[in-house]
Length: 141
Image (tube, rainbow, N blue to C red; front, side, top):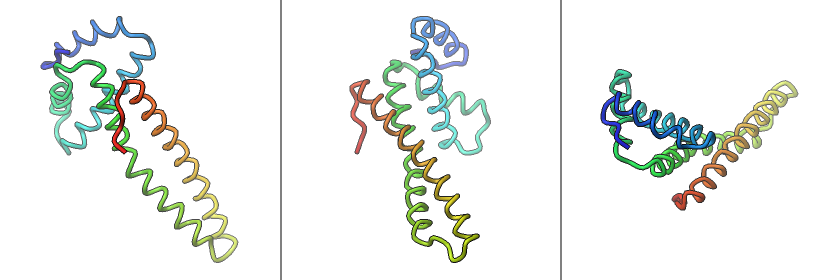
């Protein structure tokens, strides 16, 4: 892929997207978004133009498969801290329970919300790991 300028990036997308299936186009859009999040984390408060340039530099000359792999790995790295924090919070909330009915009800609601979010994250991690396997790439343990 040639994407060293904004125009080249748009031309590349215009050429590649018609050759992709609908699900691959969706995956490409998600991969580009995930990689833009990486650029945002790395750049801090940089202007938007700098973020676009960082994204283009990151993907310039790379095959789509590599973009999918990098985006999957970035997603796993992004989800890991939230997953760990939720697991820790759940363990803590289950342990403290609540000293009265009102606080017990509050903690029960928190545990339910945290459990729902953890289930969602676990499903996203599993789907991402499955996709990496489909791309013949084994994620780091």
